Image (cartoon, rainbow, N blue to C red; front, side, top):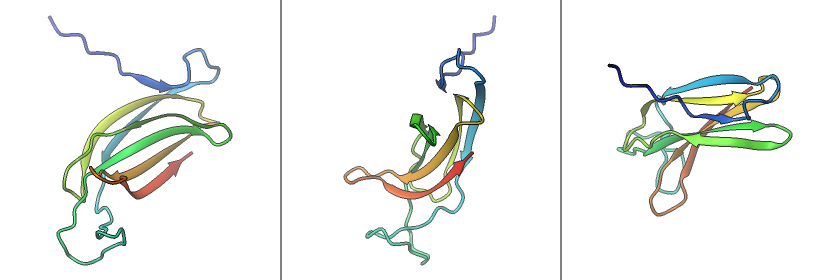
Length: 120
């Protein structure tokens, strides 16, 4: 007998919302993330600077703001993280956008912002 696969958690709108759709998002990897020195400035030197990156995904409505957000696991000490994580959102395709933000996790200070992309 095969074990039942748990249903994915769907974030975002309620199921009864009109014109909603399920959006499956797979965060695969980051390639060549920007190096930053200890003061936060970009460093283009070939030093051993690495990050502990994670990606935050935020579903939002440009008029009403954020609806929900999730984040990947943190991948330690790399500029080329491989997450391979799937997320499910219930969205209204004509109204919602998805924001991907990459951060470097810090234990003692605020996490450093590394970059973002906004997807309509």
